[in-house]
Length: 93
Image (cartoon, rainbow, N blue to C red; front, side):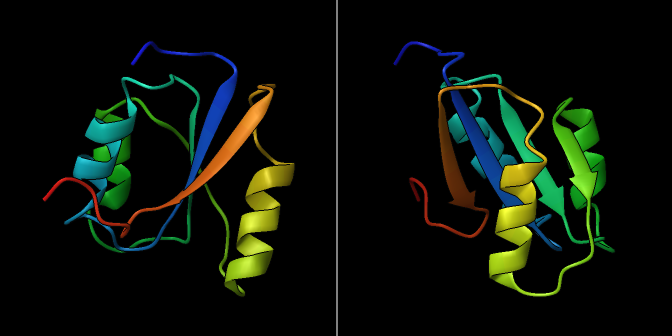
């Protein structure tokens, strides 16, 4: 699959150190426009994001809908399409 600039992938995280690398590995070849909104993880999620040079911000979690809407509004990329991906969605096992 060719990489595109017309797509942003938004991922919400909280303590996803066991899964986030697999998610990043599976989407990096699709687009460079990866935006993670972390809910102040207290594990190594943020360090993994930093090591992968992923654009992320932290925002307090109130509920899923508010966090997802906040991510959409604060998306720093101006791409035509936006995809929301949960960090715990199954990938190739």
